[in-house]
Image (cartoon, rainbow, N blue to C red; front, side):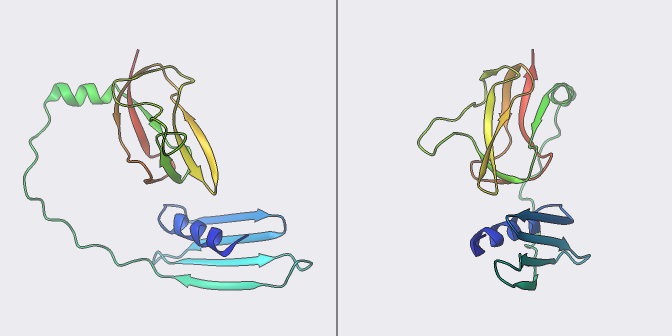
Length: 166
């Protein structure tokens, strides 16, 4: 594995809710574990026949940003809007990774608000460790809202789209 790939894995685990992560591939083993303080401890080991390497590094999380002060109070949602929101199906991310709306930067988005989808329609891609995973709608209906932005890091179980089922 390249150092950049290991750094990317550490970054993804550090920004996620994952407490412990183990990866093994072709004699390389990486084990990441968060401590109670939120720091990530990791160890990397390469098989003895390739090279001897053991490392333990502590990565401190960035300082928490100052809390934002609201500039305006958002009006309460009407009861009808809340009920409608509850009837929507959420398409969630099956993994931690990077969200992409299209198969290539110069291609149009798979779906946008207002589009009709079927259960097997591809709605986006989530990239995890250089693998591009196509995410299907899971339900037939109309896309009401795209909840994440292009290139945004998403968590396991994070809602990506709201769909009004048919």
